Length: 348
Image (cartoon, rainbow, N blue to C red; front, top):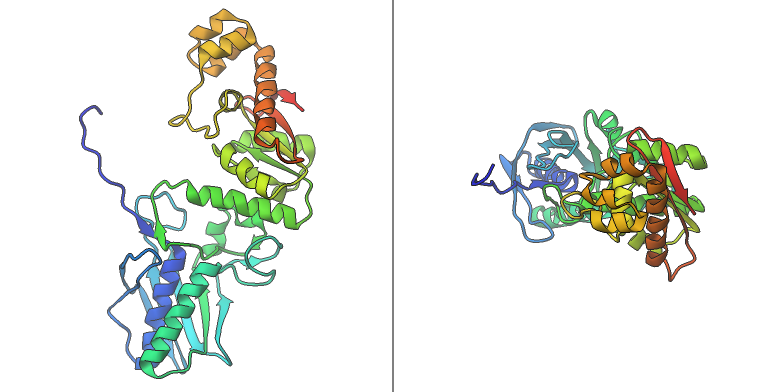
């Protein structure tokens, strides 16, 4: 609404930050005999959040604490979940275990070995730092087994990239800064990168980036690619191709709806409606139909021109992709679909 005040979006905290806070609270109980009322951490960029404990329990030689994840105003599927850390003495150093709701790595290509619980490197380093600091403070040995769990995590994980990346049975404990920034593109692009890493580690020679579910189904049916060869690119074709140029596979297919492929054909690298628009005058010139200049949408233009418009868009999008990968040996092709996933044109 014109003139309406806009509220600044509220940031939240990653599963890695919550796991570290829960670990700290459990360690305090293990080594002092009492849980803290609240727990705080200095995050990698200097933030100092404070959490209350949503769960606490202890027994002979162990203690556990739980933190409810608050993702702020970000539409994070893990918002509101409980991250629980149980600590006990280990035989040497810090050992990480995955409890209920924590996934297990089953494919190479991720920054963790196959068979490891899906607790990413930065959260691990944060937890190790807390163990070492608290051990020094309380005169204890920094030899601790940390078991993380997220009740309901296995079900929540089905809504994430984890099954496709080969992370089985639950969620990943993630976070590089500890902070969830609302509607950030970074998490999505990072998932695209990990998808490429997994495909390369599996020796896959062909991957496909698609803009949505319908184009994904169409492209996968065309080429018979496994799930881990399908990259949920969304609007981030530029982020996908940039990473792929540094970590190449021999063949890349880009598939999407005709409107988003029209943006790619005109040089856009981010296909979101707020960040790129179709130039209909230019589209009319390319397809040789003046009426297209007055079209309100690309789908409207398609009703005027028909499949020849889709072929023009596919060819132009392929040329743009070729320019993006010109310093590599990556072969590219394009698939243009309608909203139902019907293939309208292919190039390459």
